[in-house]
Amino acid sequence: MSLRRLIYCLAVCLPASFHLVPPLAAQEPPYFVTYSDVLEEPGNLELASQNLYAAPKNTNPFYSQTVEMEYGVTAWYTAEFYLQG
Image (cartoon, rainbow, N blue to C red):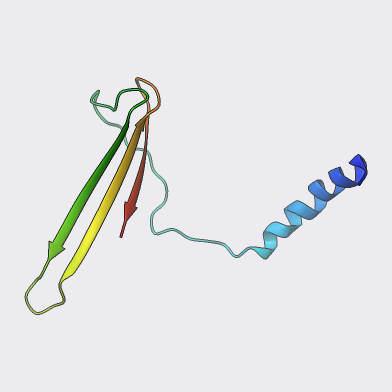
C-alpha cells in the first residue's frame, strides 16, 4: 500500500467510521475533585475496599462493594480509579 493511499484512508475512512458506533452515555459526567495535602506518595499504589450490606424492613437486602485504586503520580497529583458493583 502506498503512503498516499494510507494517508487517504486515515484522513477519510477512519473519521467516517465513527458514525457507525452508537453514542454511549455514562451515569455521571467526569469531574475533578481537589483534596488537602494528604495525598498518596509519588510512585505508591493504594488499594482500598469499602463494603456495605443492608437489609431494610419490607424490602430486599442488598450488598455493595467499592474498590478504590489510587496512584501517586507526583507530589501534587494523584490518579484514582473506582469500581463499584
